[in-house]
Image 1 (cartoon, rainbow, N blue to C red):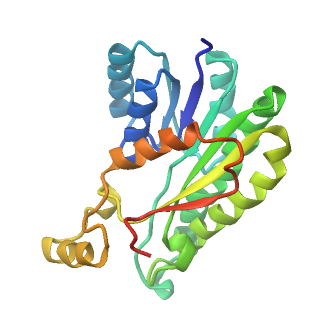
Image 2: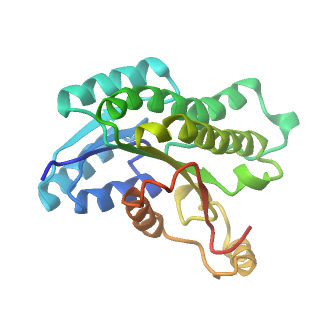
Amino acid sequence: MERKTALITGASRGIGQAAAAAFAKEGYDLVLNCIHSREKLWNFSKELEESFQIRTLCCCGDVGSYAFVRHMFERAAEFCAGIDLLINNAGISYLGLIGDMSYEDWERVLHTNLTSVFACCKCAVPYMLSRKRGKIINISSDWGVCGASCETAYSASKGGVNAFTRALAKELAPSNIQVNAVACGVIDTDMNAGFDRFERKSLEEEIPAGYFAKPDEVAEFLCQLSVAPAYLTGQVIRFDGGWV
């Protein structure tokens, strides 16, 4: 069988790392990205190669930079024929009042969370079009649906991801390329590690499922979404334990 390749941004921790492990288990070769944790990502990639007999390519850099993304996809083209599955996962947050937020903070959140999705899709789509197939999954958030106080930039960026997903899905559906987003609720990652035990308990009580989801649960759902029928496209699917 032809081996497929997945490119996952933000793959050194959290959802991205869990997704990399899950798709390695499914036999995918992997192009893995992170911005800071170069050594950690490299060691993780070698573990996946040994455990699942796959090939990996690590590309460390800022996916908010279009120049870097083009370079990453050039390296990916040398590594494999092209990307069959793109998971846009890289993301950062900013917590604080808009009056305290600098323009540079705003720009950094928008570039990392939204511009990166445009850049990676722009570079991945030509190969998918040439084969008349492909999957793009964007990791979004409940806050992109309903907004969050003191997280205006993050909410705006994820709302943009949701709108981008729906629009691109319509553009690519005639070419048998599916584009969907997963709007995550509270996932037990570093981004949500700042809660003390009282805050955590209070938030868990608000979630009908009663707990923070593990990254592995998101990764399992991403695997299911990657093999969903082609008719499933243009969707922003909430993965939040019934919270919002």
